[in-house]
Image 1 (tube, one colour):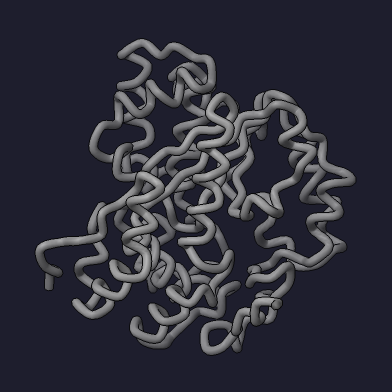
Image 2: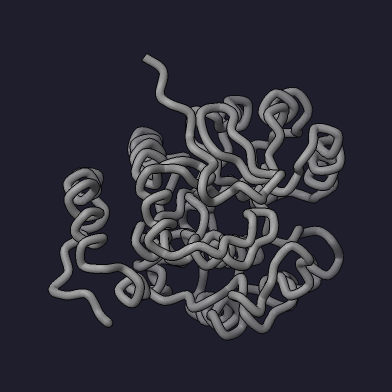
Amino acid sequence: MNEPAPDLRPLYGTAPDVSVHHGQIWAGTPPEFFDYIDAHFDFRADDVWLISFPRSGTTWTYEIAHAVLQHGDIPALRAAQDGGKILKFLPLEIGIRTAAALPERVAAWKALPSPRVIPTHVPPQLFPKAAVATGCKLIYVVRDPRDVAVSLYHLHRSHKLLGSYKGPWDEFFECFIAGNVPYGRWLEHTRAWSAYVEAHPAAALRVQYESLKSDFASQVSRLGRFLGIDLPSAAVAAIAEHTSFRSMRGNPFTNRASNPVMDFSVAPFLRKGEVGDWQRKFTPVQSERIQTAWGATLQDIGLYSLAVPSVAT
């Protein structure tokens, strides 16, 4: 039996670039994207694919990964960014809008020198098989779904492409838990990619946002080893300073300050970067629903225990 199509109501009634295809909701991704990428993208063996559900810390990890590939040489990283050798963070499939814009998106990536860090949010069943065949590296970033939900809510409020949502949090929460948001249900996305990482330990690495926050040095060193780079402590310290929330929020290359489709008076792109901010938004009932529906599965795949002693006010 086919699954019912995701419901664009009530979040996307005024968002003409949001559509349903390939079994889920997409924002600015034309249905032709996947066939075009398969046929025209130049997949390389030294590509690093950075994969996540939206609002999982991917912009942060994108900057970290580039800094690691530069061996912690931050002036060299900035020179590469200023020289157009590294693109500002934008998942490969987002913001294309029409099939006519696909050649330009692919050309921009083809023009970059290796190694490239390529961000995407696509689920594993839609990830290009030609990329895997090259032997490239995959990094999957995962974050507590409650913090993801709150961050995604504020992104919807500020983002014109997503319809500049003006409804209540409770309504958004229902859409999130039902999977009526881009990329579907967080749980299915995370479970599928976690299974892929477990099955391909030499080629794929799972990075947890909270672990990066609590033990940055060891997690970045682990990421470096995965990418074949042994980082000295001075390089790790330089990366930590460059990718701190304060630095990234003040950096025009990472803060999207000039992005015309975002209203920063509502919420900045880099809003808080905190662990546990969800406790200020979730009701006790919402917390219990997430814990009951998803908690056992998350523990089974080695992720989060969703139980908390109380919900902060």
